[in-house]
Amino acid sequence: MAAARLNRGAAARDLVRSKNRLLFKGLKYALIQLSQLKAVGGTDVRQASEPQSDAAVNRRTATRAALLDAVYASCPALSRAQAREIFEMALEEIAEALVRGECVKLRSFGMFAVRSKRERIGRNPRTGVEAPIKSRRVLTFKPSPVLSACVNGLSPEEAKKAEE
Image (cartoon, rainbow, N blue to C red; front, top):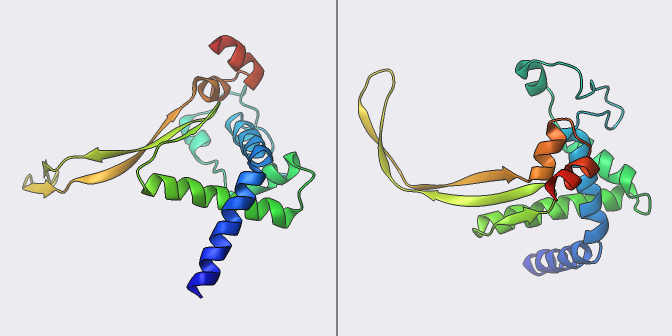
């Protein structure tokens, strides 16, 4: 059982490495499309140029299924099952890298990193009683300038030109 799992993991990593160009192109496309609040996967979403309150924007959630549909749509050479498998493996690889404490940088998207927070004394806001807060690791994300510009209404091409 464990050997089969290891073989599956090795085969999965090989598949991810061999098709990573298509995958990351598709992921980048999907995430930029979602960041611009365009229609993805048949879902009707208002254009980013329309005025919206923060509450209206926060109600929209990019689901795994919507991202997978966008990856599948941007990579016609892959079947839906292959796109799903590659998508899931990519997410697993990203998660494993973060668990190991590595930074994950995706050009034109952003950087995921793990930071360590030291132990400190906190306070219960209701009672005012001091309580120790244990040291822990937290996940941080820093968006790229291209993604930030896309969120603010520029196209990816305009954002890259503005960055240069």
